[in-house]
Image (cartoon, rainbow over all chains, first blue to last red; front, side, top):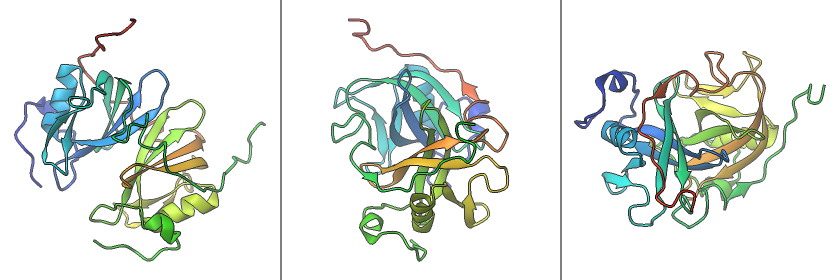
Length: 127
Length: 127
């Protein structure tokens, strides 16, 4: 696994469990409404920039470069909080999203393709 | 990339953009509160079972087997809706989570490790 050089605090870097490309998943969630906006990817440096600049920075797997969300679209993500999950392979970034988070213009990346699903009910619901 | 045989509707399977292990990311969110509970992984068959049984099924990367959430812990995830994202590599499953979603017993996998972060403010906030 390749871990690119970064300025990330080593105490955080030590807790990351990166995929073979050196990345952790990054879920962006609107801080007040709870909407799950998008899933991106961060390497150590992208996480460092996200923690220190007040704006979400991702690693673009297709372009192989850093990508400050909203830099071209204007649809910035202003960081409210960042947390690492229990096994160190996913961060949850609570943000204030300007406009649509999805590159299609939709508010979230899950607005357009809802699948048919059987709905489950917990046995004790309502009791 | 290995795609295991599955019963998933081919019209859905055709839209999936799987990682080299044949998996898509699966975010579980509490349907009413909006809490982001956990991030798991699904192959085609796990997604099929999630869509058809009313309970979340994941693929365990560590154990290399299907895993019905809550089967041993009792902390089931009852499915309310499932959506595929714009580029086909992540699903959002809205669920009714019984008890804690995290294997540590925490409600979510992001409760325990909040990182220090600079908070950003959109320039036009309040205007």
